[in-house]
Structure formats: structure tokens, C-alpha cells
Image (cartoon, rainbow, N blue to C red; front, side, top):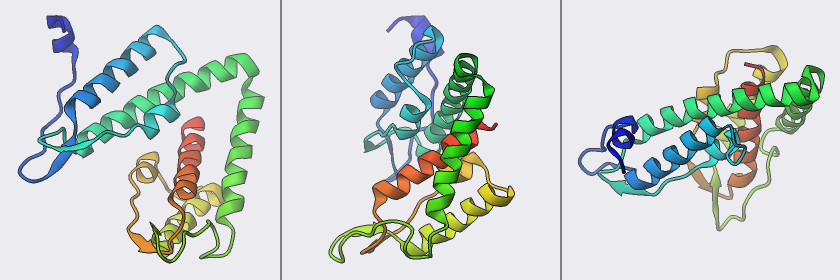
Length: 187
């Protein structure tokens, strides 16, 4: 690594004590890749890729909150670029139509009766706590229907406890990703 690369690298606080953080090398490697992709205007990395990235947890890693905040800003930048590109290629009407369609699909799922919004895992496996997911689902539905206050950061940072027979994680996460996509599209 050259001196200028080391100087341009973002430094995050390190997790202290027994607290775990994100593995530094994996974070640095991803951020280098994201920076290169964004600066080159390449489409090999998307806002969805940034949203879904995961890093190993280790002692003395970067603090999770600091890295997650930086990833949120990077995702916002990629999403803005994607919105601009899509609008220049297909036009604003098509972009808005696609976003509206995605929002309606999410709203249709979240309008299902409580405890039936997502598939559940077997009683022997763990999934997301149904009551917690339903509570967040209600808040998102109100945002989509009436514009109630909700931020992208709130959706990004939602975390659910686990329960036997809970909601299937993959489905819930996919809906949360779609909500973030919609929110970034209308910013």
C-alpha cells in the first residue's frame, strides 16, 4: 500500500475489551473496492451490494456502529447515482412507476393479518420474533400509506430477537431491503 493510499483510508474506532467488531482487513478491502467502483463509474457494485455486505466479527475489530454509518452513506451515494442513471436512460416516469410498484408490493405483504405476514420456520428452528416484526411492519405500512415519519437509518438499523417458530429471516430481510430501496429512490 502506498503512503497516499494509507492516508486516504478511513480509520474507524476499534472495539474495546470483550466487545467484537468488524474484521479490519475485510472492511478496508470492501471500502477500497467501493471507492474504486464509484470513482470509475462502474456498475460492478450497487447500493444493494453495499446494503448486504457482511464482515466477520472479531476482537479488536472496527466498531460496528461506525462502519455501519459509513456503509449507509456509501449506499446513499450509490443509490443516488443509480437513480440518476436510470432516470436518464428510462425517464422519470418509468423510474417513479417502478418505485411505486415496489412500494405497493411491500405494502400488500405488510397489509396481511398480523402473524401471517411472512412464512414461519418450524417450531424446532429459530426465526425473527413475530411480534417485533409485526410492530415494525405496521410502522413501515403507515409510512408507505400516509407518510408517517420513518428514516432510512431506522429501517437499516432494525434488529429482531429470535424465537422458535419465528418468521423466516430471508423473507423479512428482503422486504426491509425493498423498503430501503424505495426510500432511497424518493429521496
